[in-house]
Image (cartoon, rainbow, N blue to C red; front, top):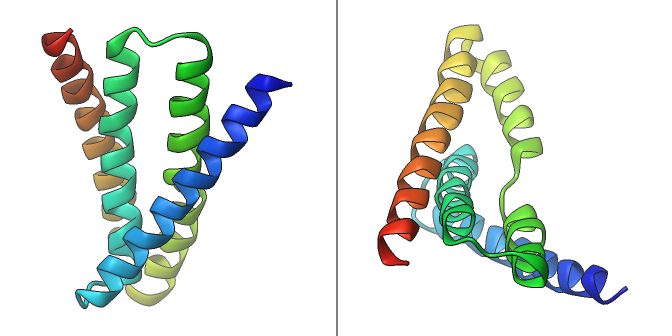
Length: 119
């Protein structure tokens, strides 16, 4: 039960971070899908750092499942891709999904390397 509380607390913090990132992008005049891309790439980097740090048990549950699970929004990515596809065609949607996945995997690898270099 204690682990579930840590995951819930982390999820609340991650969700708040995602919301604030969306406000920041919108306030800077960026498109709504820009926040999703930025959050997914940053979240992938952070997940790589958590994975590379060797965190385990409650700290890993809090950070990886809670905070980053609430922060990253791949369900929003699918909505954004559908919206782009409807507005600008399948090529734009595919480019957006490809950029999200490619940059995310690259950021994960860099995050893990960065964390391992700091350990």
